[in-house]
Length: 547
Image (cartoon, rainbow, N blue to C red; front, side, top):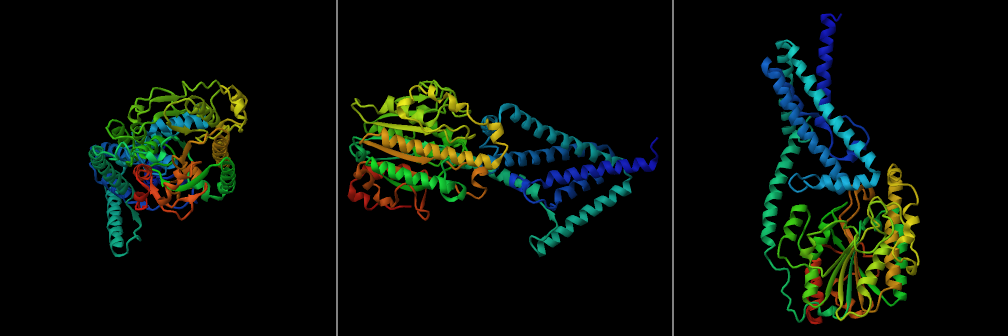
C-alpha cells in the first residue's frame, strides 16, 4: 500500500518527467548535424516557463484542457522541427509548408530506394511512434499538477514569471547573454513569415510569366548553331563539391583531365563555367525548368505555374529556328503531362527506350545504355533537319549502388548485357549503413558518368555535334557537408571552333575544369545569354557583358 509521502513522490516524479520531456521537445534542434554534434546542455526555453506558469495558475477544472492545448502546440513545433531535420538532410534548407507539401512523397521514394522499403517503413514508424508517445507522456505528466496544493502551484508560477522578467532584463542590457531562449516562438514566427512571403512571391512570379523570354528575330535565332545537332546533358548530382572536397577532387580531377585528352584526340574542345542551381540534394526538375525557361524555379508551385504558362522554353526556341526537338528521360516511368510545356517533338522515357536489362535500384538503366539508345534513335545520319536533344543521365542518382563498368559500345545492344552488373555488390540497405562508404559510392558514380560521356564523345559523336553538359544540382549534405554552395559546373563541347568562339565574351575556362574564381551565373541567366551568343552577330557579342 502506498502512503501519502510515497504518493507525493510519485506525483512529483510524474510532473518532473513532463517538465523534462517538454524541455527536450522545445530545445530540440532542427538540423541533423546539431543532433549528432558534441552533446551540450541546451538553454532553458522561455516557452517552458510560460507553459508551467499557465498550468499552475489555471483553475482546477481547466488544468487538464490547458495541458492538452500545450501538448498540441508543442506537437506542432516538434513536427516543424522534424520536417526541417528531414529537409535539411535532403535539400540543405528549411521546410516550407506552402511550397513543400509534395516533399514527403519525393522523400519517401528516395528513402525507400536507398535503404530498402522494409527499413524505410520501420524508420518512419519508429519516428512517428516516438513522437506520439512523447506528446502523450507530456500531456499525462503535466496534468498531474492538479494534485498539487494551490500554494505550491502559485509558488512555481511566481518563480517562472520571475525567471522570464530577469531573462528579459538581462537580454536588454546584454544581448545574447540571457539564460532563457525563445527558440520555439521564433521558429513559429519565422515559418509563418516565410509562408506569407512565399505566397506573395508566387503571385509576383505568375505575373512575370506573362513576359516573353526572347524577342530574337526568326532569321537570326540560334543562327550560330545552324547545321549542328545539339545535345543538352544534365548529369545527376554533379556539383562543385567534386572539384573542391579532397575526398572527390583527386579522382574527378584526374577523370576530367583524361576527359580533355580523349576529346582533344577526337578533335573536340571545351569551355567550362559555373552556374548556381535553384535546388540541392534533389528535385532535379526545378533545375531543368530554370535553365530551359530563363526564370528562377526554386519550388514546386513555381514549377507548376511555369508548365501551365505560355513561357517559351529553350527547346521551343530551337524548334522555332528549325530544329527537331526530343527528350531522352530514363528516370520518367509514367505519363508526364508537363512535357507539353517543353515542346518536344519526340519523348523517350524508361518505357520506350528499349532497355531489356534490370534496373540498378532507383536507376532504371545505366548511362551508357541511355547514350547508346539516344545515338541510335536521334543522331543517326539521314535526317533533313538537325536535332536538339535534352537528356538526363541518372547513374549518379542516389543510392549510387551498384555502378556498372564502361563496356564496349558494340556490346550494349538492348541492355541485357548489364544484368550481371545490376546484381553485383551489396544492396543499398547495406551500403547506406556506412556514411563513408556512401560517399565513396557517390564518387564512383560521378566518375562513371563522366567516363561514359567522354567515351561517347570520343567514339560516337559526329563532327556537327555540340554537347552542353551540366550538373542539375549538388548532392545531399551527407555528401557535400552542410556549408556547400549550390554551384554546379557547365561544359560546352564542340569540334567547330566557331561555336566556342561565340561564347568568348563569357570568359569561361578552357577545358573541362572551371576556374575556381570564375564568376558564378544564376542558372536562369543562361537562357538569354545563350540565345544572345548564338543569335547575334560577332560585333554584338563583343558588347555582351558577363554577370
